[in-house]
Length: 264
Image (cartoon, rainbow, N blue to C red; front, side, top):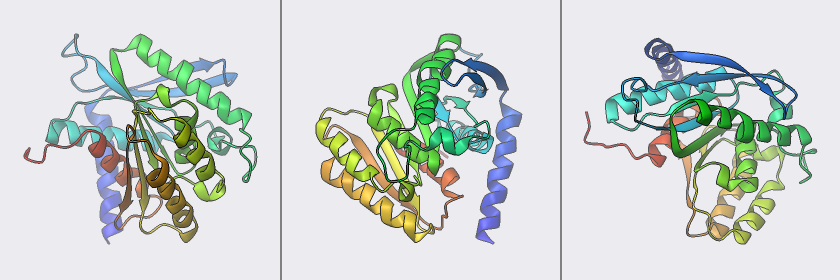
């Protein structure tokens, strides 16, 4: 019953987001991927009301649902709690979700996948650059990934920490790459001046395999994260792998940009 209510709430607010904001969909020719990719763009309601205001950018991965959910969450947080709105950018996959998002050539290897590297370049050097060249943006750069995309975002943080100010990693599929915590440990030890924000979360109702490897990931941050890095690990009540995409997005954005609790 609770699950059905939550899903109904998600669907309702998803339609609300599309009703309240103009959603633009463009086709971007990618040299990195050697193909055309769809880019979904949601502008804040106030974007055309104040021509001097610049906005942070949030990149969402996976598929259209993740973009829709993030848009609905911004509707809630901006209108109800007075938080600064963002430009939301969706980069839905082209049917090659695993190839784009799994960072490694093999499950037990640290050798990087060329396709995932090309996808990373597309995000950093093409999609993000297009948004910043065509819309009023500020220095706030956020990226969010769930499941396999969560694993990709974590690897992106390790390779290019300067590319985004904040990384939101939801239910990352670390059980497919148990070697990653070791690589993360080395990265954190070698980079003592990281100033990013990173939010990691996992649903308490998820499979035991992902729970075990996520715990190892959490322990790596606890042991080796530099003091300059702003990070948190959150376990989500009454949440399975699917719902963690929505609830984790809401909680992650609320943590990065704290909600004013006295606003009603």
